[in-house]
Image 1 (tube, rainbow, N blue to C red):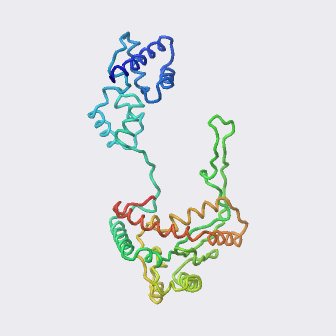
Image 2: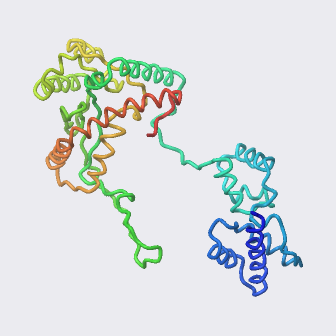
Length: 357
């Protein structure tokens, strides 16, 4: 019964291709008309091309088991050969790959690559450093430590966390190309344009300390100053007072302090101060901004906002950044800390490779 229903449809397609070809219609026009009549999935462009070649070569018979548009050359052996070619050069283009398989249409080859073999093309991601075996081992150890503590104590473990990170903030940032995108039609006469701009080098260093609920302390570095162990310990003293004032009872829960392993943070004087505070220092993996809440959550969103602002002097910039940080809801900061669980879990599953999301 199925053959009785489908056979007229298959014949009508072949006849229509032959008819339109005889009227000197182009291949793409024949393909378009077939899709309009029978639907987008009725035949591939490659299938139309093969029928056109057959009719041009003198064929008159419209009976063929391949009328569905799926060529018989698509075999497991062919798919394996395509896969082998991809493994030899993963930076190929489909056009380059088609040179090795001239018998396959461009569209069918693309289908093999993306659907049959499931390949996707990815751009290289900028990372702070290519990790060594030692770096990866320390990252694995940190992941295990973090996940074990979270499994044992749950959200109370996250409540103990206080993070610290720094970033440059500029007087003029300019919006990104992504921010300047606008909806429009492909035939719109006027497309959005951006002029290349040279932004002022005026900037200041902002150091931000926070937890799951809010920013605890913001410190702006004076021009010409540097952060050494003495300066950093002064920040820590201010931070401790800020926690006492803003988060009563938090100090008694034993702070779990997350900061990177820069020289001022690992200096003997800094260690003595933190030991006196009786804070626990979490072993942050080296060169791992993907595991620092400020780097993957807070600063990217702050920089997006800064792209829409312009400040005339340091005082305006400091006030603007401070107001923005204080205006964020507790849920915003909670999301940044909570994401650490997923990121450390993914880091463990990726054997210490960088975590993108």
